[in-house]
Image (cartoon, rainbow, N blue to C red):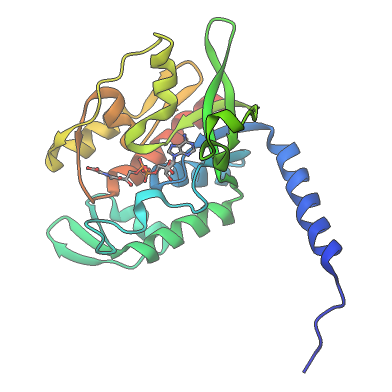
Length: 259
Ligand code: 48H
């Protein structure tokens, strides 16, 4: 049997440190920073990267995919309403027709295909990295985000004093889901008023998300469930076509601003 190459501990460590530092240095200045690696953020990032843009996704968890992995009620199945199957076909995600206009797919299969497609398209990720604040300059336009290692937030305040760092981008996308964490930072400063997501109403929810996906403040686009929270729109439960198509629309709007 062929032997493994004789590399040692220091070589492994150097390979990781060098590659991390090179990438981080490069993406400190991106075309687009997306906060949140759930379905809407991944879809937006994938499409922007496919269009040749430099995209950095900041994700507080050690895994990507957000709520797309486990779908509804911990049952590992996700649904998509028509016309969302166009994206499933594009990503090569297998699905079945559950009823007229409603498709059902396996969460892990759908989610892993979306993550792989974002990676293949050239999106870079900072996971275990939490969004803390915005960079606002001049007349209040968004110029980037302030980030820290997620584990820092788990330590007692009195024994941690770890200042965050900032990374810059022409466009920032809030894809943080129900919490709309980026938009909420504007609200804290009196620049916007969020309404909180509404009660469930599947038939209305996703069309409204599509209508409202867009620039919420100069330099900041909102997508996915964060749109519902920002504008007080009904939630839709474990159906994900609106998330994928909202991500697609966010990418289109970002592209117009970047070109
Ligand atoms: C870094 C952060 C931070 C932060 C959060 O929740 P998600 O899956 O969001 P969407 O909008 O792409 O999809 C929503 C969908 O999963 C869902 O829950 C639906 C359709 N619900 C309907 C209903 O009725 O409830 O992903 C958001 C991602 C997650 O991975 C978070 O960890 C991440 O954002 N995130 N990352 N810094 N401060 N806050």
